[in-house]
Structures are given as C-alpha cells and as structure tokens.
Length: 402
Ligand SMILES: Cc1cc2nc3c(=O)[nH]c(=O)nc-3n(C[C@H](O)[C@H](O)[C@H](O)COP(=O)(O)OP(=O)(O)OC[C@H]3O[C@@H](n4cnc5c(N)ncnc54)[C@H](O)[C@@H]3O)c2cc1C
Image (cartoon, rainbow, N blue to C red; front, top):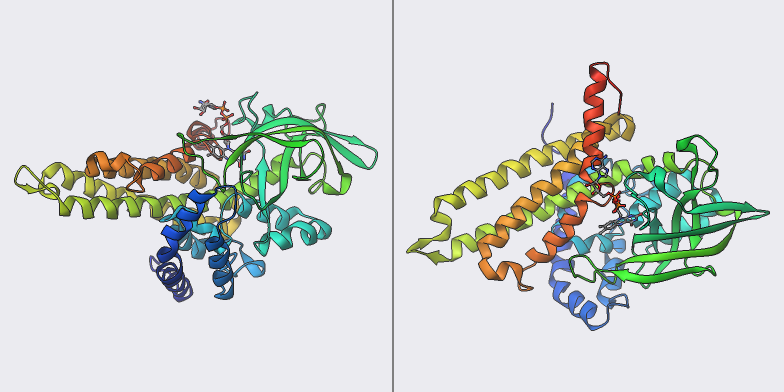
C-alpha cells in the first residue's frame, strides 16, 4: 500500500495551488464586491480568472480520461480539496457542481448531437446547466416518488411538473437543464423514470422563485423553484432512452460525491487554520486561548477527524478508479455521511473560537457552515446513505442487500 501521491498528482497539486495563490485568492475581494454590486450578473473577475485557468491548462480536471485533463479520481481528489478551501473557486476551473455531473452525464450517455450542442459549450465554460430532480410536493430522497411527467406526443415530449432546489438556475449563463421525470408509470419501479434535456428558454419553462440557504441568497449560482408547464422538446432531447433515468442518476452521483467530499475536507482544513490562528492570537484569563486545555482537545479532534475522512475519501476515489462507482457503493455512502458531519463540527468549533466574530460576516465561517450543512441533504440525506451502508452489512449475513 502506498500513501504518497504519484509524482503526476503532486505536480498537478503544486500547479493548482500556485494558480490559486497567484491568480485567484488575490482577486477574492474584487469578485465578492462584484457579486454584491449585482448578483444577477456574472462577475467580470470570474470570467477573467476562467480564461487564465483555461490558458494554464487547469480546466475540466474532474473529467476522467482523455476528455478532461486525463486525471483519475484519486489524482483529482486533492485538487478538489484545494478548491474546496474557497468553495466559489471551483467555477474558475470549470469544476463546479452541478455542471460537473451534467457534463459527466452527457459524456457518458449523450448522443453525438447532444454532445455537440450542449457538452461542448459546457466544457468550454461558455454556458451553465442545472439538474432538476427534486420536487417540493414529494419526498424526493426516494426518487421513485418523482411525479413530473415526460409524455411522448409525436416527434416531441411534453413535460409537466414542479421542481425545486435547482442549483445554478440563478446563474446568468444557465442555458440547459437535465430534467428527471416519468415516461411510463406502468413500467417496473426503476424503469419509469427518464432524463431529458430542456433548454431554459423553452416556452412553458419558468423560474417561480429563488430559494435562500439559511438566509443566504447564493447568487450568482442560486437555487430555484421551477415550473414546467406543457414544455415541448424534440424526442432527440431524451438522454440514452426511455426508462434509464435511475441508471443515469447512479452514474452521475458516484464521482460527484467524491468531489463534494474532497471540497468539504478543504473547507474543514480552512476552518481549522482559521481556528488555530485565532486561538494563538487572543488572550483570555491571562493566557493564550490556545493554552486552555479544552482547545487542545478540540484542535486535536479536528486533525484526527480530517485525516480519517481524507483517507476514506481517497480510498473511495481509488475504488471508483478500479471498478466504477458500483464497486464502491458502501465507501461512497460512508464518506458522503462522514465528511460533512466532520467539517460541520470543526467549523462550529472555529466559530466558537472566534466568539461573536464567528457568526458575523467578518469571517467566512458562518457562510461556510451554511454551505456545508446543505451537504447533509443535497445528493441525498444522511439517512438514505446510511440505509445503503446498513443494507450492505445485512447482505453479508444473508439479509436484504443495498
Ligand atoms: C443547497 C441545496 C442544493 C440542492 N441542489 C439540487 C439540485 O441541483 N438538483 C436537485 O434535483 N436537487 C437538489 N437539492 C435537493 C436535495 O437533493 C434534496 O433536498 C434531498 O435529496 C432530500 O429530498 P427532500 O428535500 O425532498 O427531502 P425528503 O425526501 O422529504 O426527506 C426529508 C427527511 O426525511 C428523512 N428521511 C428520508 N428518507 C429516510 C430514510 N430512509 N430513513 C430515515 N429518514 C429518512 C431524512 O431526515 C430527510 O432529510 C439540493 C438541496 C439543497 C439544500
């Protein structure tokens, strides 16, 4: 067993870190000022950084094989961690969710025409995309509940439904969505759903409202409630074929969860850095706050838990590389539950270390907490992943498998 990253992986980490230090972090204040000025527009600073990242070859690093940067999931994982320290920075490198998952879907399941029309501009960072699965009316963590209908009518499909938590729908460059819905309610449970491409400018497609996260607006990315009212798209927009919605959703989420988890580890590292700097810089009751023993315990716990999670994520990434996401079902579910929980505890401790400043807008901690907290829900709540893990354990003893 080898615990050192390959020379290739280390080289990529060094290149990415240098680019972050030289080109991205110095422009963070400018980027956020532009967001605050008008969050319905794409900040100019983002477009300039994207052009530089592309020029530097730090682009589409998430996509394995020849179509992206040629990295494995194991090689990409530490890069996602570097981007995760500043969650907004993933877009600079065209490595942000949900575009990454949508690109993966089009790459794996899209027809040549779908790839030419939508994958190409997505990979060039010219447009953005959204994935519309979750619905307000039903418990969407059980995707068999999804009610949106995709009905064939001659050369078209007609789509009716209501979605929400459609991430990226606030983005001024969003052009295409992948919609999950039922094409055949009489088919076997897992063959009822399909996925279909719906451009946002199709008549009948409308954003009803934007949603906030703990009060944060989150634009220019943004999450929307969307209504699809007799939306007609050509039959060619269906991805892979009727009844393959679940299969596509599974294919999409394996690597995607690794990305989220690695970014979450980056967020935890940043919170730990901030916590330690603060504890060492302030004095209370005649000694550095860091010297009060409760903080030694919290800092040590943080380091232990980050290390455990990172190793688990790297192992899951390696397993996906070896045999695909199916090969790592339990491991992916384990880290999906463990990483946000771990990071939330560390961010919470960091907030505590900062006192009142920790919950203000003067540190990134409050917003970081809000963002990471959503990861216990997005891409499926903890309980659903635990269900998978438990069922795989039961299966080892003759019970029902996961
Ligand atoms: C910031 C953010 C971004 C998101 N982005 C997207 C997106 O881009 N596209 C998209 O389609 N969706 C997106 N989502 C939606 C997300 O995937 C769903 O919220 C999630 O899958 C849960 O579905 P639900 O909200 O319908 O909760 P429900 O299914 O109603 O579940 C509610 C709760 O029930 C409990 N529960 C469910 N199943 C079980 C079980 N088996 N055992 C025990 N308890 C259980 C859990 O505690 C769960 O949290 C996003 C969500 C957030 C918060």
